[in-house]
Length: 232
Image (tube, rainbow, N blue to C red; front, side):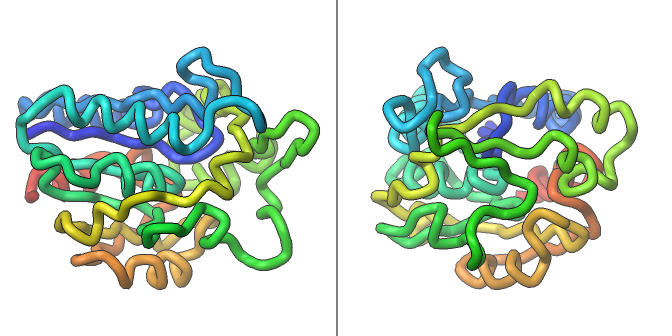
């Protein structure tokens, strides 16, 4: 078994965001990898309106999925569900999708289709001139990491990134969750994506699990996440 982690929006250094779950998996003999997403500037490709977007993110994750033939679980967080929907489609080794506080888009849907009314969320800062959006650093902990320990809270700000606004409007060309078994993890204490919205998104998943956790449950409760993955 192999696990491929796909991180959410406006962050970089995916291996850091997943490191607690990855370490527990390694202790159990399970290999994991967290591909960098070009739209977050992780591969040296500039972001912005003329830089990397969803297509480049999909290609980066798909390449990792195609590099091995062992049974693979794709774990996608938040925006990562948009990427995984297309990246994991048609790959025989992908046996299960796990969506954590995430999205299951139909073909032709984009990230913007899952947003609320009234413009960007209050925890986001959009820079139209540069063609990027980002998390407001002063709102990071209170919105996304309130249940994490102080060490994680102190380090997380170093792993934020400006992301190309292109990813918000680009539609997916495939919907892997329609063919691959899926589990949705509702984080009931999530202050970024409220639980009621997650439950609405989760209606498309094959199975739903609820955990009393904030947006980054894999940092606050990595054991719970790993137990779920090993049970697959």
